Amino acid sequence: MSENDSRADDTRTGDPAAIHDALRAEIDRVLVGNDDAVELLTTALLTRGHLLLEGVPGVAKTTLANLFARASGLEYNRIQMTPDVLPADITGTEIYRKNRETFELRRGPVFANVVVADEINRATPKTQSALLEAMQERQVTIGGETLELPQPFMVIATQNPIEMEGVFELPEAQRDRFQFKHRIDLPDEAGERALVDRFDDDPRLGPTAIEQVVDREAIRTARERAAAVYVAGPVKDYLVDLVAATREHPDVTHGASPRATLAYLDGAKVRAAIRGREYVIPDDVKALAEPVLAHRLVLTADAELSDTASAEVVADVLESVDVPAADAAVEPTAVSDGGGANDANRSASGGGTGGEDGRQS
Image 1: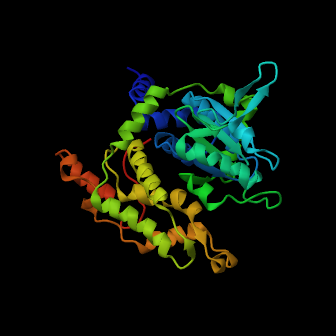
Image 2 (image 1 turned 180 degrees about the horizontal axis):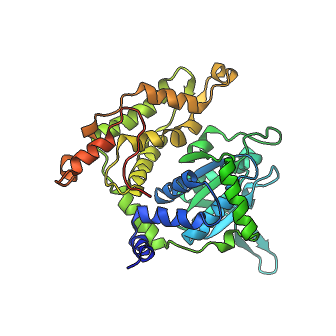
Image 3 (image 1 turned 60 degrees about the vertical axis):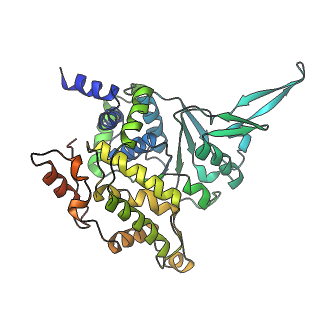
């Protein structure tokens, strides 16, 4: 059996690592240098989460979401958010048909598996709030009737961090619904040259070049497998201590919520599963600290005046909280004989160094 056939079999069986690798490889056919974003997209999909992508115009935020949906075999809708967009333009509405003397339900673009809210901070807070019920409850209410959304369902929102006019900052309640926030930076020179070569060879390269590499049954199975990943007590304590430390930091008015704690836990499990582990180590928790926590923090006025970034606060929190001992991450009976425990202990160690373990891509 070839390596590609073996990977396809692993994908069909719902192996989270194989699903991530297949999605990354397919998206890499078009874009260059988005591995971190693809991993967070995969993690959000497998944890029923949502992702906020931030970056200047032209870094392919929307294209990335489209490619991810196509590779996942999921229905994709894009909503261009502007100040004149109304909540009904997102959720849908009832239209009166005079000839029939009845109201007809017209579903909005939110009825899709992957919904992209492009430039979400250009919509008014009233319109932004139309997504709250959908993101939290996986349902919308139209004309007093509650309608279930397609499953799986995830919102991928984009925003431009440098434009200040005609934008509305996302309120805390809206930010808290996003499991992760990820910043897409400009590519380095080598990455941009690779992109130029790729599109020089095929100027029409785009989402239509992407093939489906995952099916919905595999996604459902991968979710179950990721949810079963073991988290030792000391690692849970470490995660909770990090969240609690955001609430006590002197530069923070409001720290991360319990919703963030649960999103953090689920994300760490998927990160471990993507790396072929059946247990979470402190490195999983540390790696997700900024994507999970930074966008949820409300800084003090003094911190904002001094241009303190939320990411700096998260870095301080990571420095201030003790990392669990090396042998605390794995349940003693969870590792087989023959050196597995020693390997796990080496992986779990690092004392705040952030060293990686696990499966080689």
